[in-house]
Length: 363
Ligand SMILES: *Cc1c(COP(=O)(O)O)cnc(C)c1O
Image (cartoon, rainbow, N blue to C red):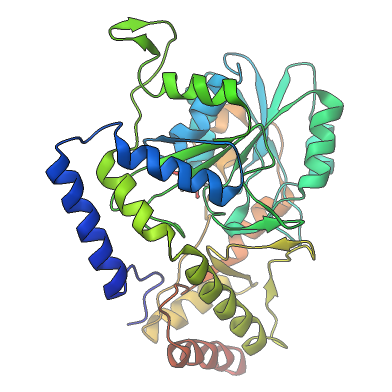
């Protein structure tokens, strides 16, 4: 069976992780200690921003970004419907109103023209989602934000290491949210996330908010939540950050091999701008006969998956915010299929997948 994702680590990384975990156990310091500070420094340097603040997960990274930027009850937040439902949950949990924009047919990310049509007096922010690690059209998004005085919170939960005009994704918005859910390009052994920003005051407030809003012991100046990145996860992430670039190169190489192997078939790939480098978090194809291809591959022991089968605006929990149909989003939700992709995927296994897909179209 070829899995969709394989989290097996090389021995060197695994040994390093075990050493790091043991250090935390011996230190008897499990929350808000030296491992977190050190990882925050390393991650901020990696993204080339001034500050990184570790939190409990990617959803909370979005929530605390919104809260620190003063966005809450009754404020409208532009975003896409073709995303992890947790993007929407973060907005709703803050009492804000998600405004669903359609996606661009080629990049599968926010259609900025559609977003602009949906701006009104209550619109306060935009959350561009770098879907599958493919950078959004940040030039247009920053222009739109400037024109209408919107805060920009990047949902970079799938985009660790992606670049746009040579600059790291996660350094464009007022803040950016990353998730370290185990399957992400940089994944912990549990939940965790981080906010990146160049704004000292926002970083300071998020540090307070993740810790209940305390400014001194038992004194709550702000209405915070309880959402921290613990020492064990921080230590694991520090050890894994060292091989993120190498793993991303492997993903890029595999994506390129897929595109080469599958050209001349009735398959459309996600378009990446010339100025962009994707993190290749997920390799998905746009194909009309998605469900039958998926069944065919499953029958050949190849495991695929669908991201995302149910657009947020059509789901019971979010239907309240439904305003209009989103033609491209709905079509892509019926046509996108994610193929196996992980750094340790063997060329021969990938060749087998490619051969089977070719067989599917011949039969
Ligand atoms: C994973 C993910 C999230 C949520 O991150 P968690 O760490 O699971 O809370 C949000 N948005 C996107 C696009 C994601 O892929």
